[in-house]
Length: 219
Image (cartoon, rainbow, N blue to C red; front, side, top):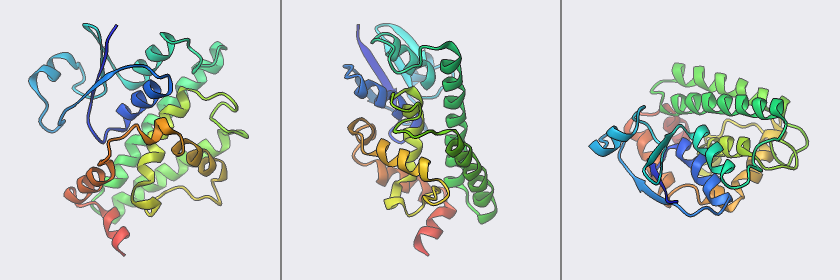
C-alpha cells in the first residue's frame, strides 16, 4: 500500500495528517501545491478542492479528521479512546479545534483592528473552554496521546510564529493550555510537521494580506 499526501505548505489541516504519519512512523510521500493556482489533476481528485488529500494507492481520502482516523485504524487504533462515548466526545473536540483554526486564520488575516479584535475575542473564549476541559495532562486525554492532540497542535504551531510575540495564549489565565501547547511543540513530529520555510511563508502571507497583526508586531 502506498500513501501520498497532497499538501499546501502552510495549511494547518495538512499538518494534522503529517503529525499522525510521523508519530506512527508511517511511510508516505508528499506533494505540495499552490492552492491559489491548483493544478487540474488536483481539482479532479479533491471534491472540496481543499487539502489535505490522501491517495491510498488509487483511492482518494479527504478531510483531515477522516484521514487521521483512517491512518490510526490501519496501524492499531491506539490514538482514539476505546469507549464509544469518549471517542465521540474526542471527535466533537476535534471539530471544535477546526473551528478555532478558522477563527485563528480570520484573526491573523484581518486588515483592521475591529475585525482582528472580533476574532481574537472569539478565539480567546474558545481557548478558555479548552482550559476548562483539560485535566492534569500531559495530553488532551490525560496520559494517552490521541488524535485530539494532533488536531490542536497546528493551532499552537501557528500561534508560536514570530517567537510567540503574537500569541493569544495567556499563561496566567490559561495555564493548562499553555503547558499543553509547550509539550506539543516540543514533540519531534510536531516540529517536523511544517516545511523549513514555514514561518517566512506564513508571515509573508500575512504581509500580502495587509494583516493588522503585523502592525502590532512592529509596534
